[in-house]
Image 1 (cartoon, rainbow, N blue to C red):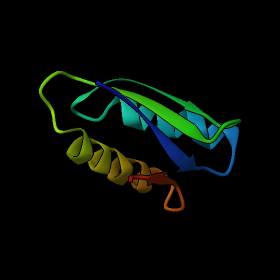
Image 2 (cartoon, rainbow, N blue to C red; image 1 turned 180 degrees about the horizontal axis):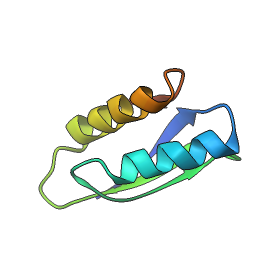
Image 3 (cartoon, rainbow, N blue to C red; image 1 turned 45 degrees about the vertical axis):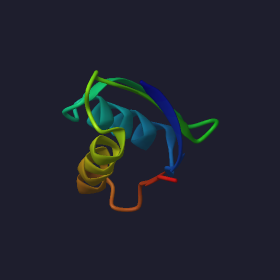
Length: 73
């Protein structure tokens, strides 16, 4: 399953760090975060609850950059 999320990130370097943190989250197969569009495309592993995984990804990112945000509908 793939989903796209709106994000709030301050700079391209931070966006790269956040992308790596999201990719390392358990349940994430792949992720691409674009600083230019402020969107993050996430591909989830089969059988995971995407909402739970993306919330964990957000927490992982906030450990690196407290002001980062993933907007979850």
